[in-house]
Image 1: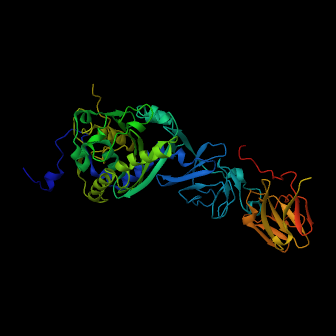
Image 2: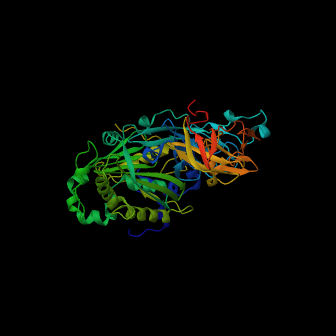
Image 3: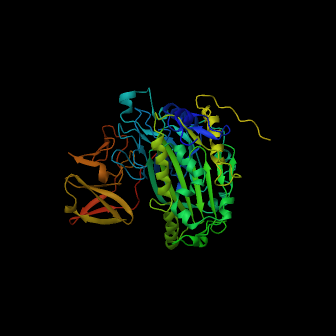
Length: 414
Length: 114
């Protein structure tokens, strides 16, 4: 048989359960809404890095599952997260992506968050400190202590990343949530303070999980022109994808031969602490975060799902806060030449997944997406994705391959 | 005594405020028509810099944030204001405005660390 008709195209693949998913999980509106409720509003999500809020009264805003969130550094230098919503009439309080509350704003006074609508004000601990014309309007029926902001659970963990959860009852720390997946890089990122030196974002038409998928396998080496022309060695293919509890995956390290890459040089001189020369680790965290350390530069991809077929990916590059200006310049060059907006690989990855997005728009017919490669759990294996979708099914309660059927725990394999 | 020569009397227009910093102390000089006054630089309500938010009209200073008001001559609160303005001693000598800055005057703001 060569080309297939519609019926043949839709027939179940000759693969085992768990080795393919239904494309509906990338395109269906209802499933997307369930994911926001059952996954994104329940988990720890890293939202930014503490070096983006260096000084007291600095802030950064973002959304988690459409909910506006603000992270601020208090006078006591502690980072806190709040729902960025005014308790009065539900307006978003702070609209800027980042800035400082140290000085006054057009609507408010120094050291406070001010809702521009009716000038209600809050301090860096979320306490309401001003209700305009309080006695006139509320007499003694409502006062500041009744209308504080909603504080969200937050933690600074893994080299200074700020993690937030919308779930007040989350019963685990970030460390417990990571379940060991971050351990291989912990010594390198926790030795001394890190600093964000690069930020850009891509808002692209594809499901967030398609970006995560492409971070979970290296089989798409064939996409990258430079990967092909420089060739692969045995050590490269021997790297393992290791699954951790909670759907996380760690892609094992190997020594990159930078001299094979025209115009590239060894990263040895500026290696992160405790990292063997020119090593490269990659960690994919459930549900949509990626940490990628290549010798001298750490990259993070933080995803914000915007719709079934739309995702914002924020790319950060980090170095050591202690870098000299000269070292920082080299580090930025190392980072941007691969991962910058015009770097060697990143733009190609983005192009690839938008092709998937174009073929999996809302309403497009269900089709099978194959995750069935078995290659000894190495980087061209698709076990990382299989591990992810097992966890996905558990949280959403749907089978990834038959999303209209409930998730069933796979049988224990001895 | 710490009398400091701050400015010429004609540097601050009638019914207006002007900020100064002498020996590390920031303050505002107000021309109230028949003399001068000197206040700390911020509103006693929520630390807003009155240099930006203060409006002077008919001898009344208004902070445009939450509309606290004071009599510019006495510093006494008017309208919704709950605290008076603190004032430095001021005298005018030979066309110069002199302010006594012996002790920096500061308002007591609610500490957020409670």
